[in-house]
Amino acid sequence: MINEQLKKDFEVKQYFDQSNLVYISAFISYIFLIPFFFFTAGIEMAMIYLACMFMTYVSIYLNRKKQYGMATLIFILAMNFSLVISLFAFGRSAGFYYYFFNLSVLIVFSNWKSPYKLVSILLEVTLFIFIHFMSFRNPPFLVMSSNYLMLLHTMNVLFNIAGVANSAYNYVNIAKDYQRGILEMASTDYLTGIPNRSSFTKYYDKVQDDCEKGLGIYMMDLDHFKIVNDTYGHMCGDYVLRECSRIIAAETKTEDMFARYGGEEFVFVHEAQSKDEVIHQAELLRLKIENQIISYENHTFSITISIGAIYRKPSEDICSRNVLQLADKLLYESKDKGRNRVTFLEI
Image 1: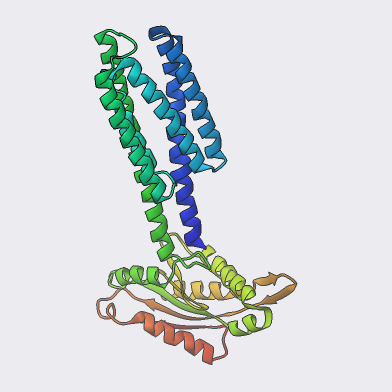
Image 2: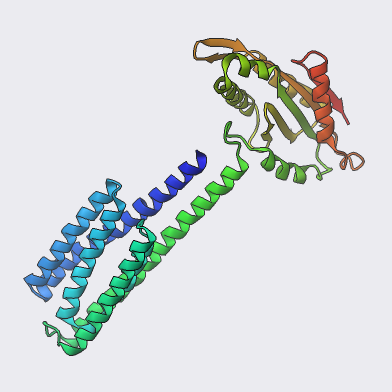
């Protein structure tokens, strides 16, 4: 479910946010181009770009309605319409050819199916070749000065470079966000939202070799959790895991590591200064869980937790010992002694 949500978010950013940026940028450019062509090339060119502006607005509207494919199609048709007219009107030297490459990129990043993308790109190439050869055989409709054509050429080059750079920049950011989401999903427990065992292992491999710092290490397991599942159902069991995770996480600091180790077992590691600090923290967590009233649908009950806690002093002699395994043994001692208790050891 998390993966599907991540894909949905990526598609929204790619097909809505990025496409919307292209459409709005084009719409704003028409606000400038319509009066520009009205005063320099005549009312006919201004009306053509006004029609394209309206079609671009339709694309923006459809894009907000999540009709991404249709929005892209209308925008590409509008752009091709203005390109063909502009090329015949001003000729090759005005630089309108460059937009064909931008449109091909837009087709590649659309949400169309691959065959449609291929056909569309082939049509763009065919149209480009046709217009290219026709421009050699037919003079432009409008005879403009070389300075005017140079201005158009410069504007079109700048618009295309800005468009490609902006789209590429946004797409790279979208891809990076998606990658970060994938990495976060891989390191997070899907049920509780806290780090998973894989994430904890990477963290612990680093901190256990730091012999200059004292560590508090806690292995924790919910008592009689199978009874909760059997009595109230697995959905209730999931709710209990989330609630207990929330309670314990509220007692940890940002730099601490609290993770789901597996099933109903959790692990907590933090930098500690003394054994009293570790004992106090372990008892605090135990009491927080014991005193929490769980309410699920029409059921109200409480649950307890057993803890194996270790204070590992900052010492070279004990740094390499498998402290985590020892904490797990202490956890099972707490279970054997009747549960809902802390078994502590200083090493």
